[in-house]
Length: 375
Ligand SMILES: Cc1ncc(COP(=O)(O)O)c(C=O)c1O
Image (cartoon, rainbow, N blue to C red; front, side):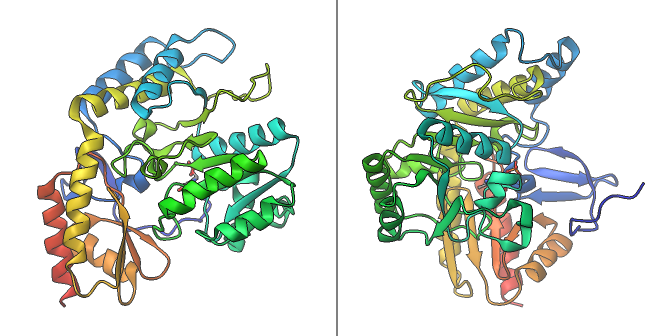
């Protein structure tokens, strides 16, 4: 059987990793500033993570959501404390798209309304509702097209007000920082006004923190920079350092009813053990603060590079707008300097490293990047 050919691949195969590096079988080392698409949060093969996951799989890898699972309770308690959302409740699933799907459902159940408002260039995942709220017609199949989703430009509060005044919407769905679009931050004032206007109209505010959350920006969730509290927050990617896991954080005013949400794999023992290990490492190694410091340093240094048209983002979620093709430059970074980066659109290079990245590793990248830009 052949693989269904949907991914553009680099001809490099990392087979093992350690910290912020991955290695091919012959021992060639690559600095990983992409984190496997913002997924590696505590570094590759972190000893505490490896121990926790190995011990759990040897004990009980999985049982269904029909029995008590104290690992879920423990994870929920730790996540509440780490994020500052102790009074919210938690629904666990398997991916970012699934988290958004459940968030949309909750808002719709809650209000009895069907429409959601999303933003230009948004990316929320590839399942039915999430992809319908994604502003990229190329990945929206005819089946997924729906009149239940409308889009307005990011940071345009008047456009939001006009839509919500119709009374048809159950939710506004917004990324903490737009990632796939190329790292675009909503303004703090826009997020504050969005919170006000959604409250005024009784519309749920859903913050998609799948890429921007989990400490990456130096706050636990990116929206906390604006001092707002959404009704629902979705999370995935870095939550379990590569073990598939998604989460929905739900404000106290949502009433849970038996059977309203569910999943086979979500919140399984192995996922929870991985998630707990990640939060333990966050605390022990002060990783959110590290993301803030190393990220601020990287952004400051990148802003000094005259060839860059723009540097966007916060913490370790950084987009650099270059003159010319980002994919060509990224290929050179990989082949000539052995550094993995991410891309977005034609001319944006994205950095999404693990929260463990050091200043020394940031310098290694800066040196290689400047050298390539000067060629
Ligand atoms: C902001 C955002 N939302 C949702 C998703 C979808 O997550 P997943 O691929 O885990 O379904 C992504 C993935 O890149 C994302 O960046």
